[in-house]
Amino acid sequence: MPGYRTLQELVDATPDLVEYFFNDTRAPHSRAQATLSVPFIPPEFTNWRDEQRAWRASAALFDQSHHMPELFISGPDARRVLTSVAITSLASLSPERAKQFVACAPNGKVIGDCVLYDLGGQRYELVSGQTVLDWVEYQVISGRYDAVVERDPSSPFNTSGGRVNYRYQVDGPNAGEILAAAVDGELPEIPFFRTARATIAGRPVLLLRHGMAGHHGAEISGPYADRDVVRDRILAAGAGHGLVRGGTRAYFSSIYESGWMAYPLPAIYTGQELRGFREWLPGDGWAASTSIAGSYRAPSIEDYYLDPWQLGYGHILKFDHDFIGREALQKASEEPHRSRVTLVWNRDDVARVYSSQFGAGPRYKALEFPVSDYGFPQADEVRDGHGNLVGISSHCGYSSNEGEMLSLAMLDAAVAQPGTEVTIVWGEPGGGSRKPHVERHEQTTVRAFVAPAPYAATVRQLKRRPIGNGG
Image (cartoon, rainbow, N blue to C red; front, side, top):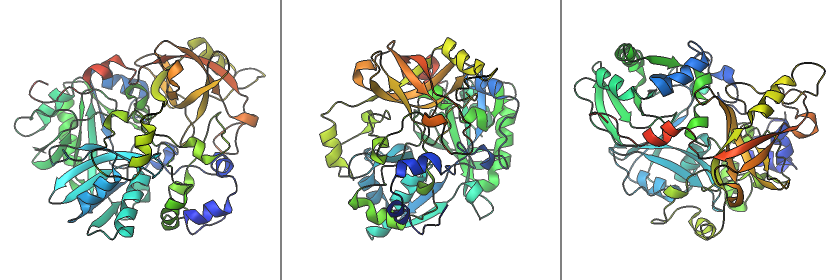
């Protein structure tokens, strides 16, 4: 692979970005390359099926300390920068309330999302979403704001010997009881996506009412040096409540039940207004290493750009402030758009894909459990009963809790109603791409029916319930 100094150089030298990202790259993320996390977190502590079951029946403890990059921004103009980027209103952002932070390009297509904390004292923390972090830092530099940015790369790429913060998550119906036993004193009531300060084993912690699997849970963070003491106290508190440690295989499969559409392709590769950003980004960085996979092979990279509605963010889009992409999104708000749904795959068709691995073939693209998508992003065609393309299926995998193969999809309104039957095209065209982790295979089709996102009924029941004080 030739070396490029900037992302713009790569774009200028690549006549077909879709072909390039489809065949010649592999995303530098633990979800796409599981071995990146192995030195820090095992794939399984026991087995991924029991670890999945824990967030439904008792509680799971996830270690999020290593795979997510973070950015800290501080100074008199820090909030002004964030407001100018976020499609979400930050009017209620405070040290007691976090925000889902979503950023768009000027054309209204999504660059990415992350979680935003207000740490107080004009200091803010953005967690995960590498391209969003890059976009925020670029605004600070190019806009000459009075703000300072500090980066904390994920552990596989961190040369400091550690992280600024550890980050754990307790998720499941027993999470409240476990945290109540773990914190020093009384656990305060914390409504959904609100934060609270507490201490665990005498160490200061920041609690966020949020669950990766979408159930009753909370995220716990604090200084990295305290990670072992805090983790051990949580494990001791959970010993009588069925707390199970979750590895990366279970962790990365949690989104199929919760409905989070993670890491869309950032809408940054085209447009003159983004040229300065591409010239600032490195030619070997995150955005230069995106890895498209699946049966959907579009003629233009722009065909993979998504809007907030497709990702389920329409309800947090607010026009009460000026932000990048506002004009385009106001126009788009008056037009029809695809909706985020869950697809439940036909069990007989899933079994047929599995059985194709035996005998002389044809061999269909193998289904890995529990995480079956093999791109970053994944894009599989979804067609209606007449063969028309009606949407894209993205993250796909298996939920042992539901006993189903699930995928998250973005569908036209005509087929987005629960119960509608559609067809997924499974496998890449032409026998498969050149990606080294994609075996030679033939395409096939899988029937599926539309269901809500989140799919799990327990997620819909527990997602927004407060934690603490009996919540």
